Image (cartoon, rainbow, N blue to C red):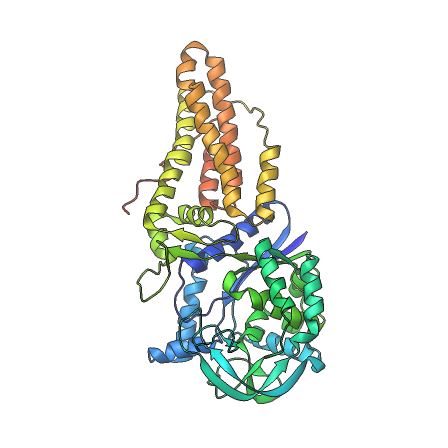
Length: 479
């Protein structure tokens, strides 16, 4: 099985926040899980450097655009070590491999699907999208709450209307599987309203000379969403048609994009339409996650509630942050994050998992110094439940399965009390501790995709029948 997994690529008009961290952690968890299943897997992330939004942000602070974009892109690249991510590649859309690949995709699209037309409409720089009068009757972007710009110019258009029936069939049949089902229905509803052709280029002047030039027309810059979406194949070496591209795109069994709900339309309608036009393979799956609010409010610089990932990692550690973000976002829905909730999750880890690992090892060393025997632990149904949750992108459900075993193990300690039974029935105490050790080993293995560092440490301590003790897995934090 060959599987390709990507996160979306963010604009770099600012530094990463916990929403960006969440998506990277989701993809990394999938990468680690499927690698452990023996699949051939590749993970990709990067940055969208070519947005007009980036240009405006650089201008607002009086900084050279190239330098501004490069600096902020490195902030996103730094998520890899910060969050212990295992992506195989990071690509900026300013790179030559991307520019050549995006231009190749444009050139491969059916020439009958691209035509020129004068367009007049309302445009949101923040969304990098046009809106109709019906979408924004007051001329204000619903998402950014800023006035839309009225634009009139001659651009290249893409004949999206031609692909309406084919896109609908792709999604209905699950050849392009959209998770959760509510987003699938939303996409089908949008398609069935009737797809309109749309502009796929901007004048060089309006793009402020920033972006990927349209092949053979120096007066036009590619619409950033044509350019940005192509990153999923350009990062694989599409420009040169190499083996990595063939393996992980054209011949891959599964091609998955993990994205936020605000960019669904671009990924499940525009992107597959471009690929169909070019005669290329389309994604097989798109998982659409919700967004975090902070203490019930949307993250906003003006509210001062934007949370930086490094702030959380410094306070709670990498694996606790990974755990908390995945545990508190229901599949495909929005979730809320707060300091109080993070502290609750950290305490849950310390009191539930950390204490369990420490108590069992301490008792085993004290009461069974010769070492614990291997005993049976029936985990087939548990492993099946984990697989069902992971294949459904339900990270919360996955962790609930793991936590059910953590809770069961702690209950077993309290109920069977090996620290007491060792005085009257040492064989029973030994059996109890051996069973608990097997449960802990299973927990460590199950947590490996989510909490790789903690998983490795537990596995090291429980490597043999002679269990090791160590420092607390979740020490008291000054938060």
